Length: 196
Figure 1 (cartoon, one colour):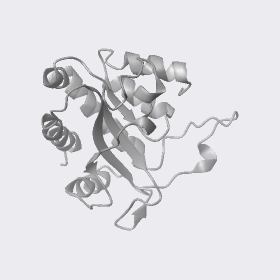
Figure 2: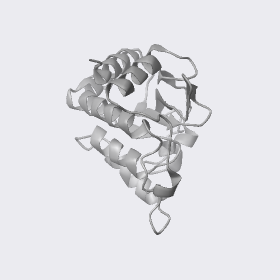
Figure 3: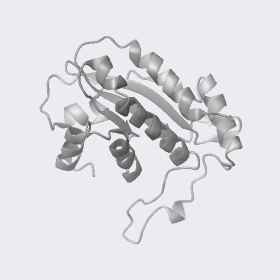
Figure 4: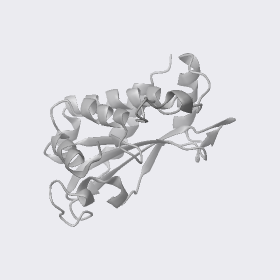
C-alpha cells in the first residue's frame, strides 16, 4: 500500500530543514494543474511545489498588504515535490497512488458542472487535483500540529496552500492546514484584498 502522506511529509520535512534564510514569514504549498503538465499520456496533471517568502522579499510590506500575501509578488523559487516536468519520484508515486485508489481520468474536468447558477466556480479542479490537495492538506496540518514548523522557525508561521487563484478549495485547505490559527493574518488580508 502506498502511503502518499508519509512520502510527502518526509520530502517536506527534509526540504524545510534546509531553509536557513532570515525573516521567513510564510510557506507556500503551490498545488497547480495545467494542460501543459503531461505525464504518462495524461494532461492537466497536478504538480506540487514548496517555497517560502521573507520579510526582505516583501519589503516589509504592511501586515494585510497584497505585496505580502499575493503569490504573484513572491520570489517563486519553488522546490518540486511532485512535478510532471521532471518525471521525478513524486509523480511516479502519485500515479501509483491514484491507481491504487481507483482514481481514473486524471486531468479531466467537466466544465458544465463546475459553475453554479450565478456562475461561481464550485468545481474541485481536474480529476486528481482535489484528491492530492486533501493529502497535502493533511500533511500540512501534521507539520503544524506536531510543532515541526514552530520549532524550525522559532515561532508559528502559516502554510499557505494555493494555486494561481484563491479558489474555495485552496482557501478551505489553508484553513485546515493551520489548525491553531497560524493563517489568521492571511485570511484577514484575503478578505481585505478581495481574494475571497
